[in-house]
Length: 183
Image (cartoon, rainbow, N blue to C red; front, side, top):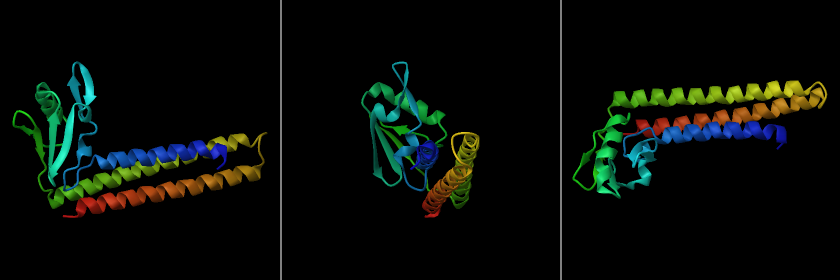
């Protein structure tokens, strides 16, 4: 691949990876430990990811269990979960915290799918903005460094990259939407 195209390819790839990570934190009908990825716990004055202060397991399809390595962290972890947008109240037995995910209603599933589609659209807009930046940069090259034919070729290759990544985003959106709508 042309070195001038590589940076735009990398940016588009990062956009898709960001969207993938974002989708992983959206909860579908079953418990997914990735919903905790963005949560931070106050650990000796430092905001620390929950994964670094305890063991996270999924003992049943709709339950996430968090076993902190230090019992003193139970209150901090509960506080972080309650302050988050997960929408689930944690329960603890003094040594582990359990998050029980209720079955999603049809209405909630539809709302989640709308949210998924909006995030996909935002991702596509980001990809198109990267394409626009690339095309602008290629047009500036015209004056001295490259011929107009080369600029056209670079723009066509950038368009192919754009199409490929937009297809990837559509595929991600379809997969996540099906996952959410599956009861």
